[in-house]
Length: 464
Ligand code: ARG
Image (cartoon, rainbow, N blue to C red; front, side, top):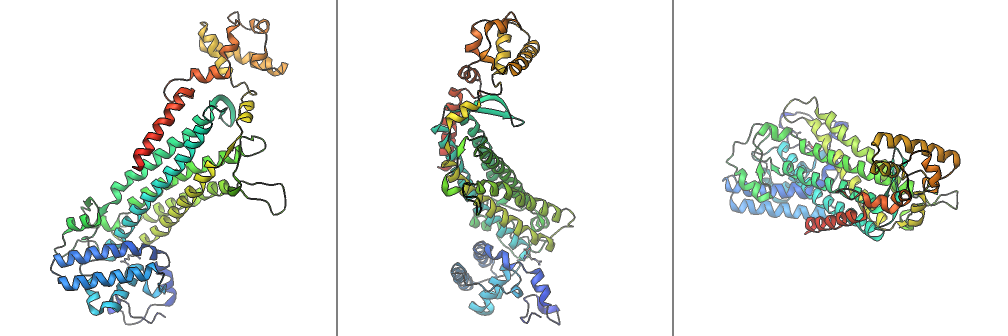
């Protein structure tokens, strides 16, 4: 049985069952909100002074007490006894130990329901800043690779079947685009995160003349929540964050999957940097892409967090319910997983050694220029559907003859269409194929160069 008297223990004659304390405590994980809880409490103490609830002197003592607690916690002094329940109660308990009964005034007109909402908002604001920075680092690594091998050609795939030639740099730039959307998604989500809930009380609003706008300003939030019931029961911002984290993890997982494929002997397009590969305990020759595999595997737990919180919330009546405590582990785990993944992927991508020769060789087999061959006939006036049919038949002939399209003689070609002439060979050449895709968004070297410059520019602006 928990021995300590609870701060809410007045109406209880007996103690709480120990198992219940353990079951209900969030302190084992919400301790990491302490810097934000203290920041919020210091701002709230200031608001209480302004409201005439605390004197200046009392406000000063409380603030100093809270700062001392922050220092203690920074140094790792924390009593994780679940009897404390959560970080809010723990800090209040330490404050009362430090400044005496005065510490008991800090919670005047305030509820943990709004307090925890504020803490999570402050926490996410900080983490998003760091995440966006780390996204930029990965974009930078991709850009560097793209620039290093600007003209390397590889087979582009659909259905994981060789489709058309593309620049390796163009392929990497696809990820730069995806990550740009991810960064913007997180930044956009900040609009809903930076809404200040204090002053909502437990659910009905506060009976004290708290200057909510001043509080918001103090905490650097541009807005205050407009409905107290919504303010204590809303976790949309956490869901949005988890959705954004899920989408970027999906992107990182796709990138990882490609790196895993590219590093196989079958592809042989890249060689992993040694510091980002692992060996086998049994097979001496192995160099395994475990980092990329884990990045792929860890996406699942982030999606899990999103689904867990959505599910936890879907049946909740307004306003606060303890189910909402389940938000934190999902969010913390998503933050750790995402940041950890970004931090290893960026240097791994940067260190990839590219075998451009091998990539180019791969473009030779698989009729990657078949579309170009059809376009050639179109340029001679044949409707595309018919051109498609002619080249399809030619491909079948090539498969039988074990030849490539460019190895067919003009005589052979003319058996399939009278429109062929010598110009066919240069038309379907690799470089010509790339060059023709010069419209915005295409793989023509000139366009890709521009795209890289633009991305560099945006990156610089985003960081500045
Ligand atoms: N630890 C709680 C949570 O994370 C804090 C809010 C508790 N509020 C309450 N009325 N029991 O949600």
